[in-house]
Each structure stands twice: as structure tokens, then as C-alpha cells.
Image (cartoon, rainbow, N blue to C red):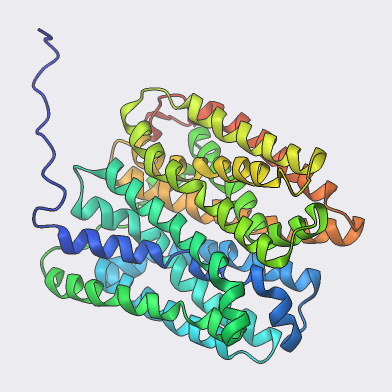
Length: 409
């Protein structure tokens, strides 16, 4: 019999007294990627009414992570001022309004501005969803992180799967605006949860300057940010450009390209469900990092060397599996910190800078395609980014805590 000390208390049943919180988390997560994936399959239809161009499309693809990076640092202050649940309610209302404004846009400027509004709401919710999980499920962080990461991936999968069909049948404005209904559905349990929580607890403190300064000097923090940000470069570049890549290099139709974009998204669902739980249970996560990096490299290599329509689904699937590094980065924010202050500081650092880095992906791919007239250079850029993830992953995989880092004076 082991003498390692008393066992920790068993986690409480997932649903006991927390069903409303779980439903809320799932529905909020489902809304966090719909606007990101709703446009790219129907750019041709939108371009009939609103001129876009390669650079314009690249800028639209750049907006989500750029907005996430811009508003993320303000989320802790909003949380402190108004409370956790009310700020998430506000974020959902902003998303809903943004969806409707995008659908009504009559120029590129309006479309871009409305998209920025939508993504700003998503950016605030991005930062506050992990604290929401920690507040209601401190004993089930790995499992509930898996649930909401999987739901986010599902929210990125559904729009490209149905966008072309809805646009063909009802017009592109309906295909863009229909996602406001999903935000409305999420508001119902969220408002109820906010009403129940009102006055029950004080909001979580913001990270102190000392904690933030330690993050800026931490190799672990920078490496985790690079894994998060480089994964984002790949995801946002693919959500923006994958349909165009597949039409050009594989000769598939626009509808088939939209379905393959959904395949790209859906392959991340099993990883989102399993990876956070595995990361909690395993002492070493290096093989998870290696699996993600290898999937990216082989997937892009296949698109470069054997892009035929008969096998392109395999390369899209492998490239999609590389996104397992995203839920891994999310759960490592908690697993690589000892204190709440450290977790908030690391989350703010990783998400703000990581999304800023992610923002460059769609634009870089668009510019390289514009300059070369082909997709070889953009795909090689994504291969290089995967190699960078591998080097950063070596540091992230070491079982060290943020608070253990002692910067030199």
C-alpha cells in the first residue's frame, strides 16, 4: 500500500447542481467560431454584391484573431467591474448584433466593420470561458475543457457545411445572418445563470503587475504562446483559403471545397474531446505535440506533392488533425500554473499575443498567393510554421510550472 498520503476527494457528479452551467458553457462555446467559418465557402456569392479581391479576403481572414488579440486584455477589467456572467451576456449580445450587421452590409467597409464587432464579442467570451469552467467545475477542468473545445470545433464545422446550400437557396445574407439565432439560443440559459449568480460571489481579481512581469520573462510562457499562435496561423489561414486552394490544386467544385473545409474542422472534434483529458492524466505531453506537428507536415506535404481529387480528403484530414495542439494549449494554461493568479496571467499573455500572431496567417497566405500566382509558397509557409511549433513544443512538454521560473535580476 502506498504511503503517498491521502487521496484527493472524488470529483462531484458532473450534472449535480450544475446542469444549467454546463448547458450554458456548451452553447456559448458553440457560438465562438460560427462567424469565423461562415464566409469563406461563399466568397464568390458575396463578391457579386461586394467586391473583395485576394487582399480583401485575406484581411477578412485576419480580423478574427486580430480582434481577439485587441479585446482580450480588456476582458479581466470588464470581469472585475461587472462580474463574470454579465460580461459573457454582453459578449453574446454583441455577437448577435454583429451577425445581423454582417448580413445587412452593402459595402466592404460595412462587412469588415460588422465582422470586427462580431469577433470582438467572441474575443471577450474566449478569455472568460475558461474562468467560467473553473468557477463551476473546478473538479472537472480536463473533462469540461474537452467538452467546450469540442463544441467550439463543432461550431467551426457546421457553417461551411451548409453555407453554400443556404446561400444558393436563400441568398448569402441569410447564410451569414442565420447564426444570430444560435447566439439568441445561448442567451436564454446564460441570462438565467447570470441572474442566479448575481451578488453570490466577488469577481476574480486581475493578475497583479508582478505576475504579468514574470510571464513576460518566462520561456514556458513564450513557448506556449508560440504553440497557440502558430496553431492559430494554420487554422485561420485554412478557414480563409482552403476552399480556394482545393478548387485550384485539386479541381474540386465550390460545394465540394466547402464540404472538405467542414472535414478539416470535424477532424479536430475527436482531438478536442480526448486531448485535454489525456494531458491531465499524462505526465508527458511530448507525444501529443509530436502528433500534431507531424499531422500538419504530412497534410500540407500531400497537398503539395499529390493533390489529386481522389486523395485530397486524406491530406485535409491530416492537416485538420494538427489542430489538436489548440485544445492542448488551452488545458496547459491551467496545468502549467500552480496559482489562480498565475493562470490568469498566463491565459492573458498566451491568448492576447497568440491571437495577434494568428492574425498574420490569412494575410501572409493571401499576399504570397498574389505574388506567386500559386499555392506552393503559402503551403511551404505553413509547413515552416509547423516546424516552429515542434521547437516550441519541446519547452512546453517539460513538466515545469510558470511560478517556478525565477528571472535573473
